[in-house]
Image 1 (cartoon, one colour):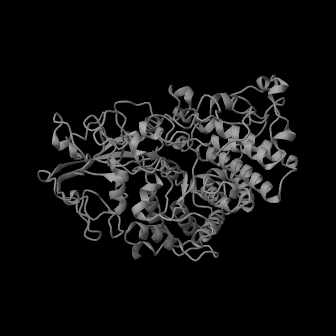
Image 2 (cartoon, rainbow, N blue to C red):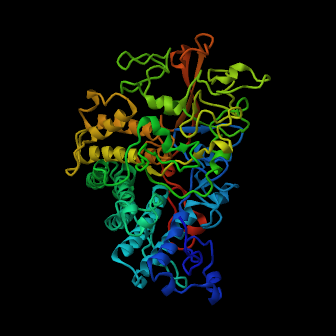
Image 3 (cartoon, rainbow, N blue to C red):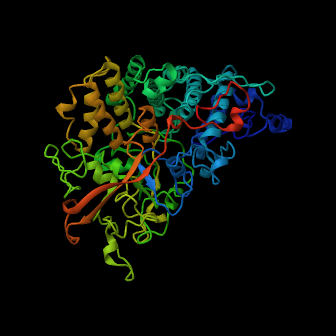
Amino acid sequence: MKRNIRTLVSVALLSCITGNISCKKYLDRSPESVVSAEVAFKDFTNFQGFTEELYNCIPDFTNRYWTNSWNWGDDEIQSSALNFHIVNKIDNGDFWGWQREFDGWGAGWMDAPSASTNDDRFSKGLWPLAWYGIRKANLGLENMNLMVNATDEERNLIKGQLLFFRGWFHFQLMQYFGGLPYITKVLPADQDLREPRLKYQECAALAAKDFREAADLLPLNWDRTARGGQTPGKNELRIDKAMALGYLGKNYLWAASPLMNMVSTGNRSYDVELCKKASAAFAELLNLSESGQIPYKLVSFDRYYTNFYTFGQNWQLPGGNNADGVSREAIFRGPYWDAHGSTYGTAKQYTPGPVIEEGNVVFTPTANYVNNYGMKNGLPIKDMTKADAESGYDPQFPWKNRDPRFYNDIVFDGIKMVKGSIPSNIAESNRYANLFTGGSSRDERVGSRTGFLMFKFTPITSNRFDQGYAYGQNLNIRVPYMRLADIYLMYAEASTAGYGSALGKDPSFSKTALDAINVLRDRAGVGRVAAKFQGSADEFMKEVKRERAVELAFEGHRFTDQRRWMQFIEAPYNLKTAIEFDRGATLNPTADPKENRVVNLRERTIVTRPFTEKHYWFPLKRADVNMYPEFKQNPGW
C-alpha cells in the first residue's frame, strides 16, 4: 500500500499513555513541518494517506526478528543452547519478559523502544504501536467533518477503517492484559490522565460497537468499489466487512469465555448471551463466504501450505491462495516489507542442527501437544503409550493412520529431510529424521528436545544442503492473524456454549456447531466427529477444543485459548513433555516411515511451568501504572 502522505500533524502525535515521544517535543516543531488539518483530511486521497499508516502499526509476529517466538502455550519448546526468546521466560513464569526493559534484546513482537511506523520489521512492537494507532484512529474520527471533497462511499471507507483499527488495537491489548481504558477521543497533552481501567466485558462492549459500525460501513470487496477499482488485485490487505465481522465475533467470544467472564462477573462459565452474539457475527460472515459474496474460501488441502508460505512464486504473499487466483483463506494479515526477510530466520528455526542446519535456535512441538492429533478416523488418542482398540492407535506404530494434518505439520522419526546430495563427511543416515532416543536429531541444545520437529510453516527442503530457503526459491513465510478456518472453529465454540448443544446454531445460518467442525475435517480428510461426543455440550466441546488445537496448531492462538478457558495454570496443561523410544528395526530408507515400528515408547516431562492465578494476565509496565492511580497493575504483579 502506497502511503500518499508521510508527514502530517497526526503522524507526529503519540499517545501520552506510552510516553515514547513527549508532547512538548511535538509542540516544539516548526510550523513549516506541519500539514494543516484542512489539507490532510479534505478528500479521500489525502485522508487515505493519513489512514494508511495504521497498517504499518500491525506487528509481523512471524518475522519480527531473525528467529521468532509466538507460541507460548503448551505447544512449543525451544532448544536449550540459547534462552533469549520470550517463550523461555513464559516457561519460567517470568511474564515481565514481554517488556523490553526486562528482556535485553527487544521482547519479540510485544514491545519495542518506540512506536515506529517505518518499513523495518525489527522495529514493530504491539504495546507502543497499539496506543499510537488508537490515538491516530481517534484523530481521524474527530476530523471526519473536514472531508468535504468526497462521496458517501469514500467517507464510509475511511470511517470504517478508523473504527476497525480502534477496536482492533484495543482488542489485541485486552487479550493479554485484561480490561483497559477504552480511548475514544484524542487525549489532551496538557491535562492529567484519568482514564480508568474498565472490566473486560465493559471494554469488549465498546470494541464491539466499533467493530459493528465498521462492518456496516466497509465493503464486501474493495475491488468492487469505485476507489478500490482503481487498484484491482492490490486491495487484499485493506480492511473490509469480513475482517470487521471476524473480529466482532472474536471479541464477543473472548468476552464470553470463562476467564473474561470470571474477571467481569465472578462466573467461571461461558456467558451465554455473549456467545450468541458471537455466533451471530460469525454466521453473518460465513453466509457471505459460502454464498460467494466475499473473496474468502477454505483452500483445498493440497494447497493448505499456502496459508503460511509460498515458494517459487515471485515472493507471492501467503494467505491460503486458491487455484482460482481470486479467493483465499487468510482474512486478516498485516503488510510485509521484506519478503525475503523470513528466509533468514523463520525458515531455519524449525530445522535441527548441527547436522543439517547451522543455527542453534530450534522450536519443536511438545509431545503433549502432538497428542491432540488423533487418528484418521477422527477419534482422539487417549494415551500415547497404550493401545486403543476403539481408535485403532497402536504405540508400536504411533505414526500410522493419523489425522492427515499430522503428516502436514509434524516431522516424526524416519522422515526424509534432505532430498539432494549430502557431503561425504556427513553420514548418509542424517538424511532422515533421527528422532529416536539418542538419535542425531535429538540434540537437546540445537535439535529436537521432544522427539518431533515441525514443518507447517516451511518446506522440508529448508536445510543447508537442499537450500530451500535460498534467494532463488522465493520462499515467503507469513502466518495470518485470522483465517476462515478459525471462523468455523469459533462459530462452533460460540454456538455450542450459547445454545447448549453440538446442534446449536445461529438462526440465520444453516450449519450447526457440529457441521462447522465437520467442514474442516472433511477438508483435511479426517473422520467426522463421532456420535459419542455429540450427546452433551461438555463432551462435544472437548472435541471443539481439540479440533482448534490441531487446525490452528502453532499459529499463535494456544496461549490465549488456554488462558481464556482457564486451563493454563492446571496440570496437564502446564506441562511440556517429550517422547522417548527406540527403533524396532534398522531404518529402511525405501519403506514408508508411517509403517516404522518403535519399542519402549514413553513420555517424560521436560518442563513444569510454575504458574499461579496471576499468570492469566501479563503485567503492565511499571512506568505506566505509576502515571496515575486509576491505571492499576494486574493482580499479583
